Length: 218
Image (cartoon, rainbow, N blue to C red; front, side, top):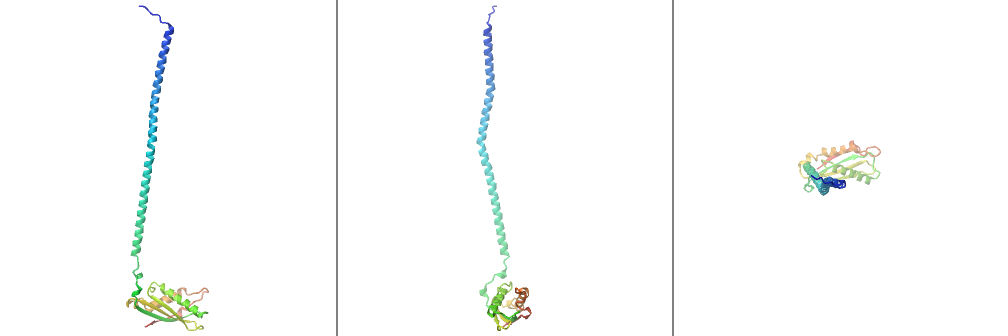
């Protein structure tokens, strides 16, 4: 057999080419997975960027639904409370406070007198003040206010401290004359008024309670 003598330079060139090919292949293998991973990462990032607004919209939609549900519940509770209040007020209406004065065709009068602590400095003004107090007294009475009609006062002269008065009541039924519009009821309302608040600014009594007299007029 003949052995061909290959120059050492060619052998070195061939080895260098193989090394270059191997290194190029290794570089490609190394780069290809990275490029693939990079592509997948890019796709994932694009996908994430694409779905994140949808997630935000869904979160906002859920919050809006919860807010609307809370508002509806609050409105329902408010409506129930309002209705309950109206029902309670309707049930608590006092039937005695509902009346028609046009049906009051019966009349009852009382007259009497009382003594002032001191005579009036101005009789006309003093009598008007007393008449106004009597009107306010009986109009504000829970038992007699609906039946009260009129009050009048009369003086016995500028030097006298005695005042005469007349009270008029109207009512629809005869039974009320002896029950509510009795002399005792009307008298006690007046006397209690004198004991409760008949004091002027100086602390003296405006009307002497023990001097109060009242009679039923027929």
